[in-house]
Length: 519
Image 1 (cartoon, helix red, strand yellow):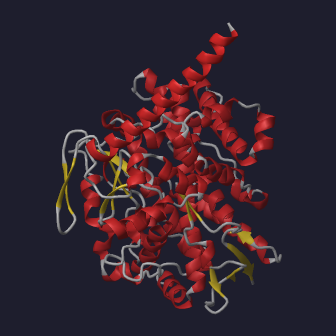
Image 2: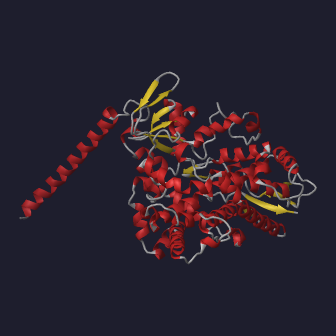
Image 3: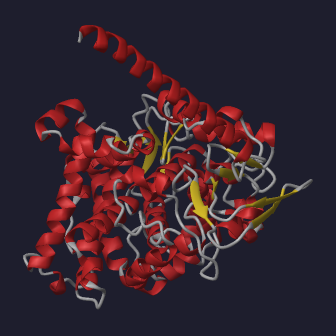
């Protein structure tokens, strides 16, 4: 018996190893020479395995976007970046890939799995299913609907400016990442659920939501490679998860909080119908959507994406704007002079329509959107029914149907042929060339464009106008200013992208964009 096992175990192990080796070699040969995208240029290691991407995203910490940029420099404007996916850097191809309703575009399940939200609108891969789900919420994000939301935005920016005044009497800095996240989160929660945590009014702007959202995004690269990681983490006891990763534990707590809000709304505990504005999820629950589209799980997942997406990216855009306006006195002076033409005093009422007519303010808004990128990672689209034609300037390429193809806002926004001196915050570029909007892709484009684009613009216009009609800088002060703002231990390295974790992240160890408020 012993001799049987002593002989069979090594033999079985050897057979298993041999079979595994044959499988790996066969797979590599297929991917290199017989895959439908085998002819596209790129590193052979990237074509063979996801480990190439894993190394740059997980081991190196969110660096694959920068590696993709280097790959384009070496191989050209269309490259293969993993066994299944192509990436394009040519800006004029964007609207062909991210197209309108006349062409079907799926998302790629390998990418969307990282969020663990398969029933959300964002996580819906199928084109037709996404269209149905999006149609239910589109009316809440139209320009007209957002105009009606201005009183809520005004109330929250008033509260934020009151907090600024409170900091004038202290020498404590404000971390704008937290302050602006509080501002945008309060608005998003109020619009979604007719309730808010009033983070603007809380000590240190209650950064739990901000930190939890960043933590959730930071783990996405690992979850893409190992989808079982997220369910495993969720299964751990809360106390152990809090010890292991406090921010990720807060992220799961955030999910639980939103699920609770959905259940309360369904049970009538929260009477959203009494709100003085329409709320997204109350209206969805009372719509004629099929019951499966109104399940607790699905609505909770949509709630999470609406609130997180409506918080982090816009807040970061405001941080970018404030940093550059305080760093460039002449830019700030031009903005304040223009604001004086419509705001006779910092407290004067102003409509969003009037603000949108101001060319220099619009330039500032467009620049902060460009340099904050929206999501800084690549976004894949799959054309299931057509062969996409691409010309790199020398050769025609034909992308097979069903191939994931991606582009990245960071690469487009720093394409020097479109945005000369692209690292510079230059509002004038939008005044001189309004057609540049074609290449502003922070919100993506097409049928899956960020649904909150109009809300984000409204929050940016109103916040920048109200803040800089009230405050100047140390070198730029106007007669009606209530004080001035000064950067505190903040440099360009705190706002330049150094890591792609789906959302932009600054340098390691950065404490964010911080300011002092002075009289």
